[in-house]
Length: 193
Image 1 (tube, rainbow, N blue to C red):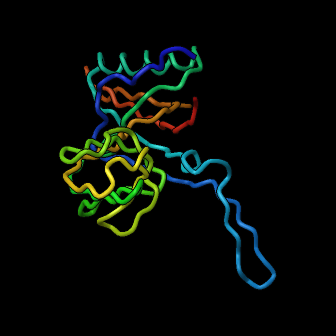
Image 2 (image 1 turned 120 degrees about the vertical axis):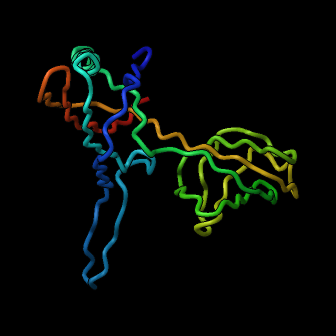
C-alpha cells in the first residue's frame, strides 16, 4: 500500500467516546458453563471505535475534510493517535533467564501489548517486546531475546504507543457561525499489514 497517511496534527475537542467490542465467540455447554474464544490473533480482536468532535476554524475544518475525502478516494487507512492513549512510564526490572519482570506502579499494560523498552541501567538489551504476562497491577513480564543479562537488575523506561490505523466511514460538518466549524467523526480501528 505504500506510505500510510497520518491524520493532521489537529486535536479533537475534549470529550470523546471510546468503544471496545472484543470479537469473542461464546459456546453454551450443557452443564451451564460457557466456552469463550477469540476470533483470530489476540492483538487484532479488540478494535476500538472513537467518536470525536473537532471544534475548529473553517480553515482547519477544510484540512480535516480534505484529508478524510482523500482517504475515501484512495481507500487507505490512516495513522491516528487518540487523545490520552499511549504513555511512557519508568520503573525497575530484574531478569531471570529470558524472563524480565518489570515493576511499575499502576503500569496499565495488558497481555499482548507491544512496548518499546529502554533499559536505562544494567546490561539488558533494549527493543520492542510483547507483554507476556501481567502478574499484578504493578508488575508484568516480557521475554528477552537471550539470557545474556540473567541476574541483572536496573532501571527501565517503557513506552506504549497509542497510534493505530483507522478509517473514517462518515463525518458531519456544522458551521454555527463565521469562521467556526464543528466536525463530528467516527474513527474505526483496522488491522492491516
